[in-house]
Length: 159
Image (cartoon, rainbow, N blue to C red; front, side):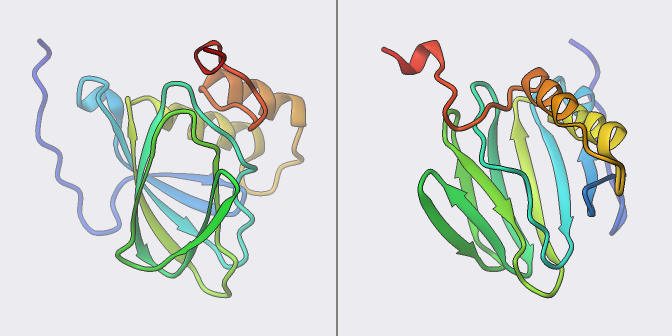
């Protein structure tokens, strides 16, 4: 087994990725922990619309709100999460998030299994902070990283 080393980051540390006005700081890359997880801090600017509703067949999320308010869609339900709130999103659950407030919101995301940080990096390359969005490129990236529209039907859901 690969020798896994401890990682200590200072406050504000991590590898920064900018996507659609949000700043993401990858705290733990999956290759540093044998592919088990990715840990990322999201800094969502005021009035950040977030991604469209989607679901995953492989990835699961655990979110902890650090500051501000994070608006979350879970299936047909809408929730407003306050600092200290925790949310686990299992596979196949339609979800989305946004920051509808006039101040920054912060979220710590733990994604399992690891590898979701590559999705963020590809999105940054495709749309960055102010690039023109090519919807076909976005769809291709989403499918590459297990991100499907709400109406997509997985074989395991048909049983």
